[in-house]
Amino acid sequence: MAHKTRYFVPVSLSVLLHASLLGTMFVAFDWARPTPITPMAIHATLVAETTKIPPPPVVEKKPEPEPEPVIEEPEPEPEPEPDNSEELRRAAEEEKRVQDALIEEERLEKMRIKEEADRKQKEREEAQRKKDEEARKEREREEAERKRQENIKRQREENERIRRELDAEVHQAEIDAEVDRLAAVDSGELQVYKTMIEQKIFRNWDQPASARADLLCTVRVRQAPGGDVTGLTFLSCNGDDAVKRSIEAAIYKSSPFPEPSNPNLFDRNILLNLSKQQ
Image 1 (cartoon, helix red, strand yellow):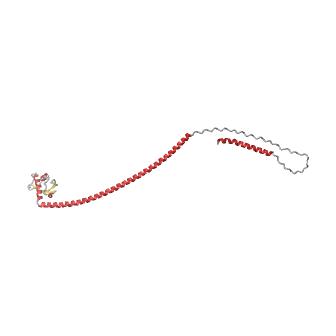
Image 2: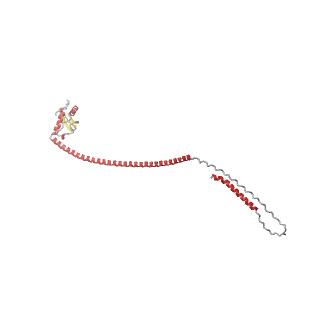
Image 3: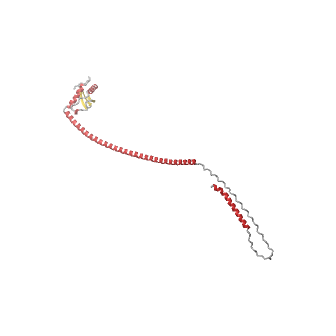
């Protein structure tokens, strides 16, 4: 394109010059042509002498200037194109790096969104699992409590039944024992039992000098099964404190008391009448 522009100006000037020359020649040629004379009607006397009309001056045609020779300038050698392969390579690498970064950023964003969705899903599943587990435990607690209440009720009913049966048995046993005891009392066995106890106490009694000849003390003695003495109370006694202390010592020394021949004659609170002479 630069090469064509270089030759455009000289060629244009040459064309204009030739056009100017042709225009000048045309005007000169047209001016040099003889102008036709129109005859006029003149009333005159003919004269023999002939008047010669001089010819029009001849205009010499100027020689056309020869066109200046167009000197063709030698075409400059094309400049070597700069080696921009390294720059293109760096630009391509930079563009690839940017594209890779965008792709990686998009991948990471998708991964982040997926991880966030997975995390929320796991949280929902964990919350539902805990809720279901709590509901299951609550049902188990309610079921266990229901069974416990049923067991308590059943045990109470069973205990009440057993208590009624035992009460009935005990009551019957007490009735039977009382019947037997009364029978034994009537038979004189109770008096024999009490006499055995009084004689043992008398043997262990160290009578003080203040004991009266008509001494008589009624004592309620508390005993456990087997005859062990657990306590005593003087209901009446005509002796002094020394006598009472000596009787108390003799009772505890006589523990355990002899057992009755009939178990129904055993009395936890047995009344004993102690005198100086048994």
